[in-house]
Amino acid sequence: MRLKVYADRMSQPSRAVVLFCKSNGIDIEEVKIDLSKRQHLTPEFREINPMKQVPAIVDGRFKLFESHAIMIYLASVFPGVADHWYPADVFKRAKIHSVLDWHHSNLRHGAHTYVLNSTLGPALGQSLNPNAAAEAEKVLLASLAKIESVWLKGNGRFLLGSSQPSIADLSLVCEIMQLEVVDKKDHDRILGPHKRVLKWIDDTKNATAPHFDEVHSILLKVKEKLKKKHPDEAKNNIQSSRKTSLHSKM
Amino acid sequence: MALKLYVDRMSQPSRAILLLCKVSGIEFEEVKIQITKSEHKSSEFAEINPMKQVPAIVHGDFKLFESHAILIYLASAFPGVADHWYPADVRKRAKVHSVLDWHHSNLRRGSAGYVLNSTIILAFGQPINPKLAAETEKILSASLAAIESFWLQDDAPFLLGNSQPSIADLALACEVMQIEVVDEKDRERILGPHKRILKWIEDLKNATEPHFDELHSIMLPVREKLKELKVQAATKL
Image 1: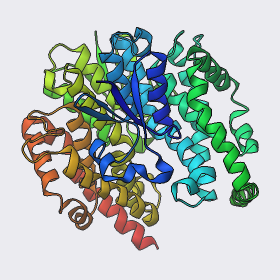
Image 2 (image 1 turned 180 degrees about the horizontal axis):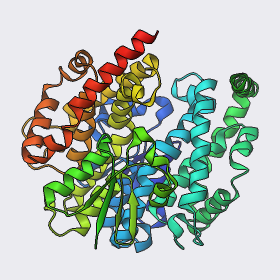
Image 3 (image 1 turned 180 degrees about the vertical axis):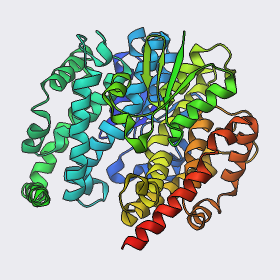
C-alpha cells in the first residue's frame, strides 16, 4: 500500500514533507486537502487528523501528523533515505532536533503570522490585520537574523555547518518561501538584507532540484491571483501599518 | 563526561529535564540561571546558549539547547534511561515526537502566555496585561481540552495511551504545573473542569516520586510572593 500524504501545497510544512518524499524517491499518493475550501474541517479528514491540520500521513494503518514528526518517521522507515537528512549520529541528530524545536516559536510563528495578516488571511476566511502583521514581522526579522548568526554559522552550505541538507533545511526554507506571495516591496525589504539566507535557499533549491521549484509552483500562481484581486487593498494595508509603527516610535 | 544543566526551576522546560535526570539516576551539576535577575542575558551564558534561554546543557564538549532536543539526547545517550521514556520502536517514537511538536504552539504558548501576562510579569516589574492574558487563556483552555479528548485515553494513565510515562508526559505536565502560581480562583476556573488532566498529573507524580513534588515545591512560595506583588501593584494605582 502506498504511503498517503494529506497535504495542501499552500501549507509550508506540507511542502516540506512532499519535497522530502520526492527528493528521496519515496512513492506517495498525495491527497490534496484544500484549506481555502475548508476541506481540513470535514468529518472524513478529522478521521485522519483530529487536530484538523495538514500535513498528515497514513502508512498502512499508521496515522501521523506534525511535519517534523512525519519527516523523522519517514527518514527512519524508508531504507533509501541518505543519512544526511536525519543523521544516525546522536550529536548531529540532537542539533537537528534543536533547530526544528526553535523553529515553531520563531521562524514559523513570525513568518506564518506575518503572511496571514498581510496577505493570505482572506483566502482562509480571516481579515487582514496590519497591526498583527507588524508585530509578526518583528519576530520574523529576529528569526532571520538568528538563522544567519547562529544556525548558518560556519562554512557549511546548510544549517548547522553541514555540507548537505537535512530535514531542518527543508522545514525552514519552505517556511521562508511563503514570503513569495507578499507584496514585492515588503518581500524585498524583509529578505533583501539577508544575503546568507538567500544563498542558503538557493543551495537548498539546487540540492533538491527539480522538485523544489515544482513543489513551490503553486506560490507563483497564488501570487498572480492575489495581484489581480487586491492590487490596491494590500498596498494600502501595508502602508497604513507603516504609519502606525512610525507613530509609536514618538 | 560531566553533564551540566543550566536551568531555572521556575522554567517549565527546565523542570522537565531535571525530572528526567533525577528519575533516571543521571548524574549532573545544576547551574542555576535566574531569569528574574536577567542572568540568562549575560555574555557568559550566551557562550552556552546564543539564544539566551534555559534550559541548556553542556555534556563534555557538547552544547545543546531546546528542552525536547535535550530530553531526547539524554534518553539516547545515557544507557540507564528506561525505554518507555523515549521508545526505540519507530512508530511509538513518532507519536512522542508528534505531541512534543504540537506542544510548542498549543499548550506551551497558551499556558506560558497566560501565566506570564496574568501573574509572573509582576516579578519583572511590569503590570499585568489583561488583554493578552485573556487571549492566551483561550489557547490554554483549547489545549487542555485537546489533551483530554485526544492525547489522553481513558483506559491508560499517560499520554498516547501509554501505561508508562514518556518524555512527552514530563514536558506537558511541567507546563500545566506552572498554573500553580496563579490566583487560586483562576486556577480552579481553568483547571478545575479537567478531571482527566488532574488524574494524569497525579499518576505522573506517583510514577516519578519523590522528584516531581520536590521540583515543584517552588510553586507555592512563588504564588504567595506574586500575590503580594499583585496587592502592592493594586495599592500603587
